[in-house]
Length: 255
Image (cartoon, rainbow, N blue to C red; front, side, top):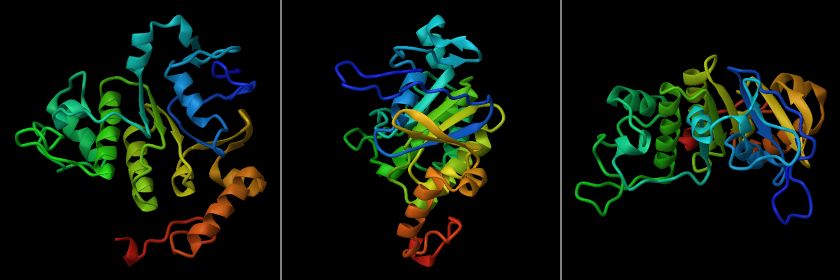
């Protein structure tokens, strides 16, 4: 598959060949401009590739009704939508039972943020403001509610950037617990304490897959992934957040 944005001098994705097995979690890593977010947008069918195709369940998504396809895919991007509506409507814009909404909030670590009828904007009677991290939990709950309503693919593109390292890893662990086996999950993140939780990790470079495997396999390979992991671990190590194996260390100062 090859894709380039209109007017751009080069393709963002160049002969990309990648299969994500159903019911598994795959993390996508790479430097800025490697094509990570573009891949997620193609899966949402916000764009179509110039060559090749995107298949879901063996079917070219261009053969599917756009609305039907998007109903099966739920995505949370870094610049997710914040609705000046009730908490219930933010988690389930298309409607869902209160049980589904509450379960999704709990799985996303957002239980107790507000009552379901509370408007998430202070300018309204009885409304409230949420912090950036709280909004991210609401956005993740929206994705989990969609899964409970039938979505089979979850795309997470840096959705927890405002949380600390420990918070992001905790949230992704919750998402995996709620989706693993029944839903295919694609995660884009620059934090390797989160990435290593995925079943498989894909390293993109200049729009191509250069490495693919589990965290253990890629670390043993000693290639691009290992280099990026070691570089990040060395930066965080002085703050006590990682040990030399990349295992997260919890210190009182992080509480």
